[in-house]
Image (tube, rainbow, N blue to C red; front, side, top):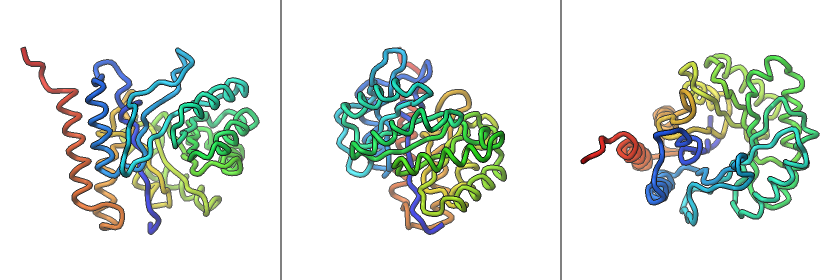
Length: 270
């Protein structure tokens, strides 16, 4: 557990991507600044809007001091469509591209797109969506996906439990196996919270060697949400001491969550 753990926040995109969770442009900018002050490593500020076939932004002109702005780009089985999306993403000039790839899709469809992103000299994070279930059904093919992403130049590969099915002991076994296979790689964890284990799954994954945690403030997101980055970071701080965080940065992150609560849930005044 000596390696630095990084935190990827998707509150502004996937966390607020439901009816009733809209913020104004000024509020999104302010929240992004608070996340940056709380020393989040990555803030997802843009995504590929498939319905409009274009890049969409939740925050523009962000000049963070600590965080790196990131864009989510989904890749699928259509190699030509992947190439078009990557070209648009490169033109958007975001320093981090987070490529979401269903684990069931063969690397032949997306390897070139990952290489294209890497060649653009941006940081490339690959999220293998629904990896937990795919690995249970096709273990050899699942590890081949991780190897393909690393060989294509991904800076980190995240093993995703999109359905929130894994129990903590199962996530611990999965991450332990992954770290043994790829000891030099930066491996991450993400997942839904359908079984209320997203926070614990993130924690046990870090204890087994994961070095990147995806989540949102208060675990906001589709369905039951995701891992709560504030809780995960505070727990790791209690376990590991001040090497990664201190009381002040955790306080700033907690206050960002309180601000978000006020904007989303405070009663409307006449």
